[in-house]
Amino acid sequence: MIQKDKNKRLILVTNDDGVQAKGIKELTKIAMLFGEVIVVAPETGQSGMSHSVSLSNPLYLNKIKSAPGLTIYACSGTPVDSVKIAIHNILDRKPDLIISGINHGSNASVSAIYSGTIGAAREGSLNGIPAIGFSLLDHSPDADFTASVVYAEKIVEKVIQNGIPAKTCLNVNIPNIAKEKIKGIKVCRQTLGKWVEEFDFRTSPNKKEYYWLSGKFSNFEPEATDTDEWALGNSFVSIVPIEIDLTSYSVLDELNKWEF
Image 1 (cartoon, rainbow, N blue to C red):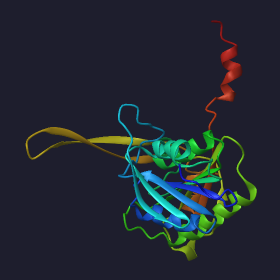
Image 2: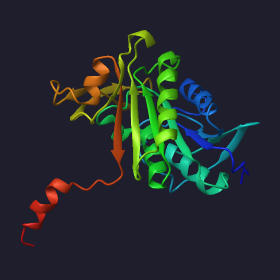
Image 3: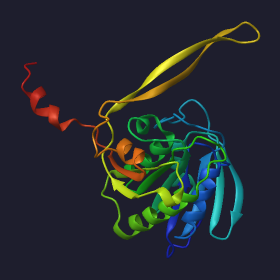
């Protein structure tokens, strides 16, 4: 295990785009402003892995950097694997904060369900650790993170100052516009909507048939002004608090009326 100075804040950084992604490199720079940093992230892209863990395959760790205040590991598993192995096998104490991202692409609305970036943040909150997932609405590998860095630093600082309620993490999305055009930050709720999938039927050069998943997002409440999709579409950074408890409390009383 890595022995860290217990007098210094310890921050774990991860993502789902892979340890070499531009977004995690920018987030690591931000983390280093606030404490000692351990990066444990998938060695390859793991988008769409949600909260999945590796049950049938061994996990491999490769230390790719060790410097004062910063250690970086590549993990062969998923984002959640990366958080779990960091907490249980790499660190000698729980980190004070987990930050995940900066994801290349939106994790607003129901995308948060599928996201490995948000899955890693949820794993942090399951372990009683304040956690934030950051995403930029740009899938390009060479995305411009100038505005993201400014707002991510502000939000990390606020979380360090105020904490996050237990069993809750933050889902932060940043619009893909110039820093000067961002109007500010909106704390909001998750938009009701879904991805409408399309499976494109194709044939490979060796005549093998296959399907390629694509689709588009359908917003069920485009007129609502208190949602993350509205905030992003109107040039705001969105923050949605996400709870671990999946219970539908509004349905409990109704189900208790049933006769079993």
